[in-house]
Length: 366
Image (cartoon, rainbow, N blue to C red; front, side, top):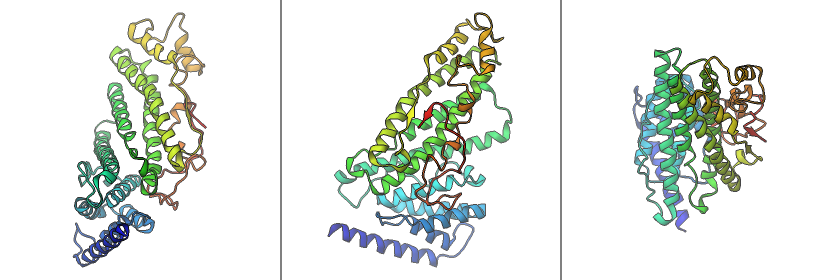
């Protein structure tokens, strides 16, 4: 009876909000139809997502950057007022999908236009909603930091065409920290493993592959550059990056296992991540302690030639053409499924990547 009452009350709130939105005048900051679509896409109905209106929001954003301000205002107003974890989670999935449209105006947005860092659901007992509250807060924290980061990177691209090696290493460390935040977005309560949370987790698998691909590609490139740059500080920082990547293998394995137990579609396949060999880390340590000179010689001058010839030895996992190919291509139609509507396709996916046909690298095998 209580659930029925909450559902009815939520539906009434949504209809009232839509009615008020349609009465608002159209200005550079207000767009009644867009606001109504946002409300429908973030309804109080926890049993479903309105994919049609989510696609309409994405279409507006793709059409023109002038719709970004009405989107920011409409979604911000919706998120700041709500005390429902269902509405909050749908709003986060919606803005996550907007990011995947890869529109320059969105990439320059900066921090999210709303704050859910202290979100608490007010429609149920806290003993039943604490897990949802934590999920919303951690999901928000990640998206907020990502929005800020991609905005900063977009500005830096204009200033510097060829980033310094040290800057590239710092960038990789930043994305590794982002991956740490992303892996914290998970259900903490057994009762949460279904419904909207399951849908959100399915989206997060795409995000993990996207972030991890940037880390892999970055490592592959900078480690090749290490052999061209006579700088121990860079090699030392690269060593930290590689060691962190090794710990991420363990973290990702655990995360995917949790997702499989939940029944997350995109983690349902038998996923195995191979550890970074100790030999690869030792090669970097040799550079730092001076046993390898920066003309590419190591006990007979073989390390550089092995690296160039693609030998099985010497950074064999970190620096390979397979690692360099590890990007959004891993999210192909043969590996990851799209359960809701993509910004870039007709599939039903709020968060998804373009379809590609490249193979997965040797660090991630099925």
